Structure formats: C-alpha cells, structure tokens
Image (cartoon, rainbow, N blue to C red; front, top):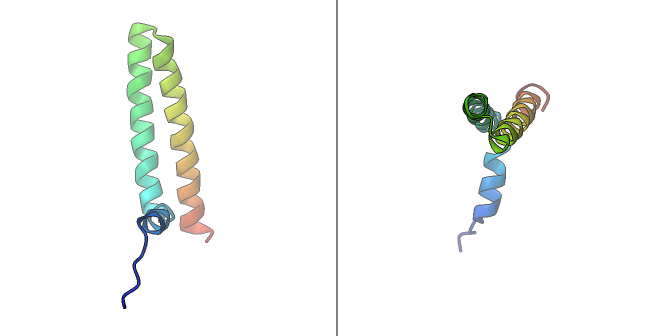
Length: 72
C-alpha cells in the first residue's frame, strides 16, 4: 500500500527551500514599499504599521533564505 504524505509536511518542506523564502521576502518587501508609499501620501498610521510589519517579515525571510542557501 502506498504511503500518503500529508499536506502539512509538503508545505513544511517547501518553506525550507531557499528560493521559496527569497520569493516570499521579495513579495513582503514589495508590499512594504507599497504601504510606505501610501502611508506617506495619506498619513494613515495603520499603513505605516503595515509597512513596518512587511519590512520586518521581508528582512526576516531574506536572512532565512540566505542562511538556507549558504549555510545548510
């Protein structure tokens, strides 16, 4: 009988690929840039918060992708 691989383990393995992490980092950095641009135009504090959160997640995933690419 064939063994079934759970969806959860496939997703976990996919997130350990450096290319996926790098793409995710670029998406977050792009969203952060967009929200920062909107925040400067409108002065909305929630857009500033979204820009800061996107920047943090983008940089975090960028460092994780570099660590996966070069140190593992």
